[in-house]
Image 1 (cartoon, helix red, strand yellow):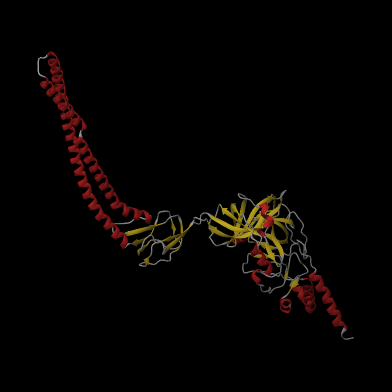
Image 2 (image 1 turned 60 degrees about the horizontal axis):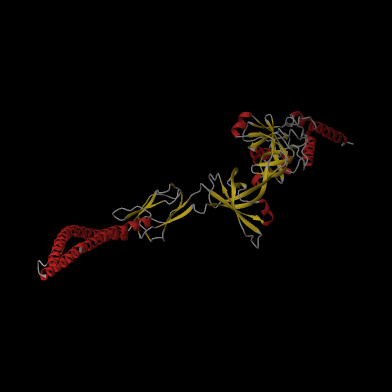
Length: 532
């Protein structure tokens, strides 16, 4: 009987504790839609709300966007590797045997086409230049001699021409006189005025005059002089060619180097393309061998490609010129666009894939060798669907959450996602058009919710205020040990399994008593956390 007052008191205290725990607390729901008050696994109901003042939200970089309906471009997704254009990676080798005397660029430097990269001194080039100079001196002497001979031959030809003209004129006059004398003697012989012997002499003189004219008209000396002139001209041409060849050997060698050189045999190595210096394996003072020793490599990353593979079954959806989107892990919020430039002609017999190459239009800060997620756009959604940026999603142990703004409060809402298109993702359930969704800083809000066991707990930042109601002190005085026991029991029974933090970190439990705004039955004490 003496235990009955104690039992009665305990029951009364327990009942009072239940009344305290059941005190009404306002639940938070974002404006315009009722997502419910209690979180149930597998639904999109809010687990808790986090209040953040405007100044704090701005400092934390929180950004929200409305949920909109839009038509999404969808396609085939595959993985690939970022590579340079076939002609945009160049290894610059030594253009000549020699020694490196100057290095003008470092790895990482950007260079323009034709820019000086290094200088090499080449003894062989010096020897070649000296030899060409010696040949030039001899060729110049030969040229001068040939020019003199040509001048003499030309004068002789002119003189012989003049002589021949004079001889022809004299022979013609002599023939004319001989012809008149013969004709006169022939008439006189017919008249019996002279002896026939005199006619024979006239005939002989006429024949001699004709022979003299024939010799004069043959211009034999002139022809000989002309031949000598032509020989002198040929000798001059040969001397000029020799002079040109004496320097052509040296100039041709310089052209083969494709680099300027000084008279001291210093060759400047220039960039064949514009780009960035990737590596420079050569050292100052190192001996280099022509076309063998690498001096540096240049990569032009302004125009890059992505090489990937597409399964045989998807080939009907891929064609040259098709638009693509690419993403890399180091730049998750940036999308690179481009087009398919080549589709392989042969299917691999083992993997049943075909190589595909896409050229990117906005390579930007991409680096060759990066792995990329390539999406080949082949279709569009037939109608507009609810969509949000993928960066708004938070992965919480297999569940996908987003944070919806309601004034200064942000509620985590579970959503069901559908097709992805670049940086947009389809929302099949959990949100309504016009909902203000956090698209920047969602992970920070998620971390804050974990610190309070699913609600917004006290943080190092005093301006981030969780939605909570502390149990009044008089409740503890009236309830005593029974209230603590009841709270422990109800908290253990109703608290959901905590969601693990990102990267496997589980934050420390709060040390004060908290009632979440959306879960009035979840009461946790410091003793509760120690025991659980």
